[in-house]
Image 1 (spheres, helix red, strand yellow):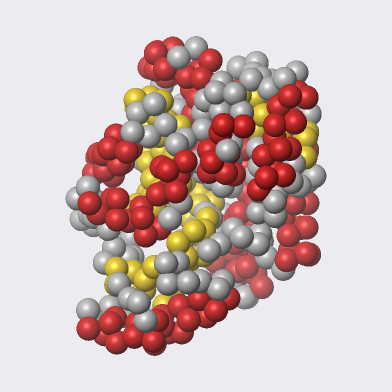
Image 2 (tube, helix red, strand yellow; image 1 turned 120 degrees about the vertical axis):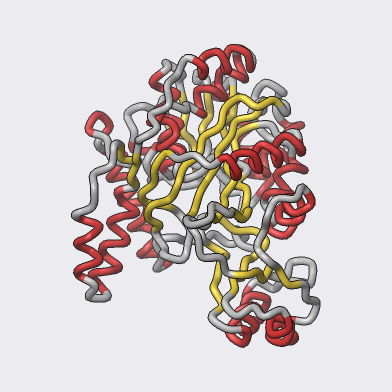
Length: 399
């Protein structure tokens, strides 16, 4: 018997949720389609259950979850990644208490689609990058020339963790990338990649917990280093504040009547403070360990909302103090960056990371739960061997 079923257990955001819930004596069963990962190797879980990947068989995935919940007498499903929208789509297969934390499916659909989320933010008056509209990919170069856009960002409408994001160095290069993506992913004209202006700025995130449209907690961070220099997952970040993006984030989630956990990403000009909306992650996010360590315990707050009500969660959060100078590092991510620099003979760059200021907390290495780091290493090693990538994609993940 367990209180919580935590899905997609191999990644660090899931582990941070496991660790936070266990701190408050909430029992957690870990689940995933893979046997190897961080939570799978943790001594903190009440056991591991394997399910079918929703990318390969959505109905079997749901059936597996139903059976696991029955077997383990689960009280609450705690979705971690893109399976959140799948569970939302099939919420009628579960009791209302089991899926109490799961967002509205229609809201997930908006935020999991780059074009729809941009439209939503833009209609609210929130700044977004300049985009081009096109129906014929052969005319992209000409359209970009007309609006005087040279460097671009090309995004598949559905992606995550930097996957599905590409960069055009010129109008011709952009057109070539778009054509390749359309062919590779067999995209029809309703799923053509989004082409937008490249914005050079600092990455910020504003994370929230809402309960049936009611704001419970929020947290802002600034990215200090990213696994891929052009963007994607951060490996080093700090607690921050930015009134503009915090107001914009509240406007987005207040307007839609959000329910659950989410994170809004922005680019910010360090000189002027001007900001641009980038995307919404309608689920847990990679840098969530920073928020928890700094004093905003999103997983436990969500548990309190589901089991004791939002007032109890807000009262608990009001008694917590935010560590405003806190920094956090993803050790495995920094190792990837160092190795990349070494392979390219950029020894100075590698040394700068190795010799950088120490973080207040590490996402994925804990002396009291030592083997989770080995679980993470083995998971990524398996990806490198089988898919030749440290940021692998499953079939159906990008579209």
